[in-house]
Structure formats: C-alpha cells, structure tokens
Length: 214
Image (tube, rainbow, N blue to C red; front, side):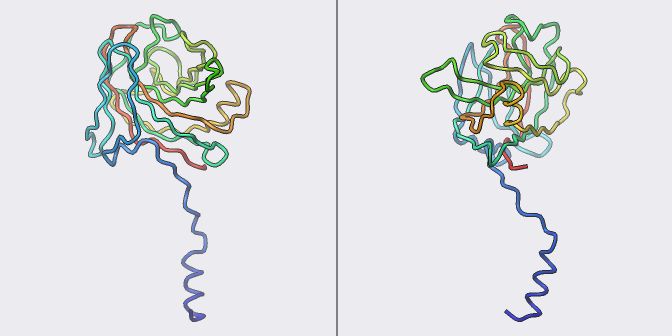
C-alpha cells in the first residue's frame, strides 16, 4: 500500500468509535421469533408479530390470561451487561394493587432470570415492568415469588399511552443492588403481558431486545 493511501486511511478512521458489541435476543423487526417459547400460567396471552408505525414489533393481547414468552440463553454480564429494548402500551389496568396477589398483573414486563438449577429456590429474577398504578422507580418483591423475584417499575402513570419508550438497564448493577450479589451470568430473558388475576384486558407492543457492552 502506498504511503498516501495509508495516510488517507488513517484520516478516515481517526476518531471512529469501535463497533458496539450487540447480542440480539428478540429480533422482532426482522419478523423473527427464533428461540422463543411460550409458558402459560393461566390461559394464553396472544403474541403475534405485527407492523406498527412502519416497523414489525411483537404485539401482546391479554384477556384475563397469564402467559409469557421466554428465551433460554446464557448471557455473560461481564461482556454485555446492558439490556436494551423498546415498548408501548395501548391501555392500563386501573384500580389494581400490583403488590398484591389479586393485582399482580402488568401491561408489559421484560425480565431476566438467573437459574438456580436443581436448587430451584436459588432462582432469581428481575422484572422490569410497565406499571399501571405504581410510581416509576418503585421496587417491591413479587406477590407470589417473594424476594426471589424483584419488581422494578420503569414506567407508570406518567408515561402516555400509544407512545414508544426505549429502555437501557445495566443488569449486572441491578442484580447487585437488588440481591446484594455480583452475578456474572443470566440464563434466560422473558416477557409477559398478563391479566389473569385482575380479569382485565390489555394490549402492549415490544420492540427488539438485545444486550450490549455499553
């Protein structure tokens, strides 16, 4: 390569940031649901890929049902600690106490799971939720699983309906804060829109989900 070409290449690449490490989990915009499985607790929330605002997203429609989608994938949080996604909801579940068993329903939730293996009581989870009646940034133990599954409200009544919001969470830091442990790996990612306890109806949309290094 000639000296002039080397200098030109250096000028073109100077200051160019390194490509971000991006680990896809949910590639909904590519019309893909590879690796996602459905888990039903009571009835079935209907999940389907649908175009909205010109982009394919995952639509969730729940009528007095509680089922979610999960994807088993071991994630190294030392390499890619940040969980990224977007979401929106069409309506809210009014008049419920989300911290009670009777009101343990959410318009949308994305959660990460640390498997306890055969020692199932060591399983831990963080549920990032779009709450209907709980203030943003509130944290509480799940009504059914206790402090093995912590709920963290990222959106609440302040968030307008039918509007996309993008989220980025440092999962490793959140696990440290909520469980007091430096956990290096998670084993699954899940999402769920559920109304089985309140017997209500809710519609939500999920955009692509991925992990990144920063």
